[in-house]
Length: 246
Image 1 (tube, rainbow, N blue to C red):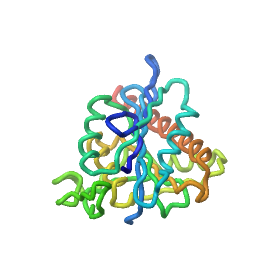
Image 2: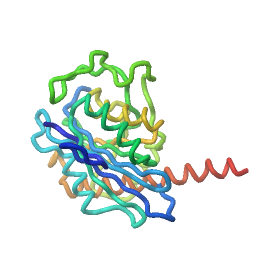
Image 3: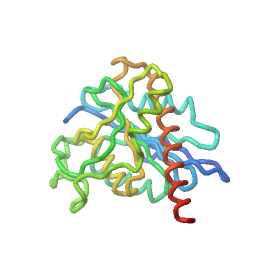
């Protein structure tokens, strides 16, 4: 079974997420597998990743998420890890249930792409074009995530800003931007989460292990990316709150 990791754990799947402590306000067809990370309310975050599938006997996204779990995030954030099966029907059931249960401020999914050579921040998820069979040899008859839903949903996170900030840190990992998450389970999961959260989700694609990065390098990159995402989100929300007050 191919799975992705997430902030919640259910059945044979695992995921990762973080919750800010009380009183703090933070907050194409390629073989791939997703993980997720999300913060609720006032600074809570969750992360999820996929398990093995197709040619990926070892899913780099799940390994990277486990490395992130070892490193942790900033002190005002609690981190949780989950792995989600690479199955359309499970994703359609699990993602909304996790959002309903945790009401996170942000969810970050992490997946592996066999074509990637950089750590890639996905700007949006797509609703239609899902023709690839999942680990259960299933594909939605409608070939879409949400019937009647918009064709594309953008994340509320400014990925360009996050990319620039992380690149300026001098990590030994290259971070890039993408507008096409692949029309497979990664993209499907991302759109499902974006639709459920009205854009309060993010997706990070990582390359296979050793091509060229180690698990430790990917873990550190995820740590930096997620902390920058939280910072960008907090500042954008502070700005909105300020405008409302005036």
